[in-house]
Length: 327
Image (tube, rainbow, N blue to C red; front, top):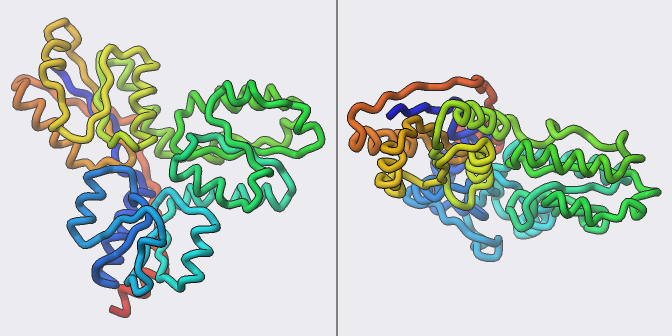
């Protein structure tokens, strides 16, 4: 059996930054540190930070007034949450991914120019909730999750309205392109007001999906490391399936590997398996899967497939840098 490793895979710059913010906040302020929602959607990352003294909560109301520091997750938060934190004078460290912040800025730009904004994303996802929460009046915003949602729009409702769109940063590039194309077709007289998908879907999402497509061209099956609530990890599995691979699965770690299924897969003549990881999955999980496969397939070969190299880096908040210097 031969294993092909996708590159790039795993942590993106936004996740690297978010995890670093939590770890450096512990250094600067001590424990416990509070984080509103999971810092990123990966149970191993969350568990590791909990072991270091981090407490994850769903709402600010669960955080005591004397908390040493409160961190907003990489997915971003609504304006209402920001205002609530300010009113309580909580020591807030914002770990929102800068690419999500960019989408928030677009939302505010469109509001200032009196555009109606279509938000393309998954209902109830933390990032979408934060993005839609950038406007106080939801009448100026419409959530689009599927092509059917576009079909259900009444074009006449927007006849005298300027329109624009933003998207969740972790969507399937292909599926989002179809939704945008249908939206443009539906609102023919508004084309000049619609931006491009590249202004929204983040570089790491695009790069990891492109790498999976490359694997699917040479592999019979694909294994993706990532937690079940990770949007970008789930999209990698979707991309593999849409490319026609015979076996595609999302697992949290090596303990979830179905070795019997892979052996049956191998004995049936399908011998190439690709491995990737979502943007919130650490590399040690990939190495754990490789070790497990090597134990069961002693003659296994491994080859790296490099589709692009990522050089993006994001700095941590200046407030945290100052706190570390003053410690």
